[in-house]
Image (cartoon, rainbow, N blue to C red; front, top):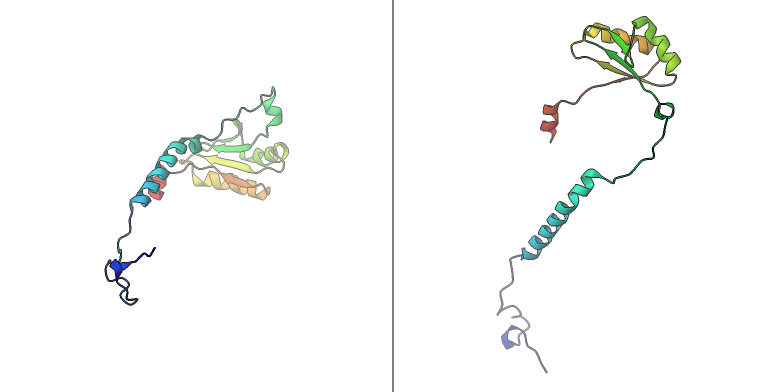
Length: 147
């Protein structure tokens, strides 16, 4: 049994004479695949957002097992607090070195605090060779511009 292409023409040079070449790409299968992937991502998005629920074990004495962080707070008026305890600038170095040996200090100052007070606290901690981490809050408008 013989099959012929090109309408039975027998010339090798006239191979594509009868049928024009397809110059269009069929996008229907591509759109189908994209829509299926979209549905899959929409269904699984909430799982990625919340994570896995884990019940952690309960213990009686949390304070003994957890490490307390050194937080130095400066109010707008210039008052110093070490973990909610009022202190003076001269007591700061000794208290941090004795109670929080080997830890860095988190410095949290009010935005209206005079810079002189903040600089004095940073200088005192730097003289004692204590690491300083400044606590800030991200600006909502800056976050909106980044997205």
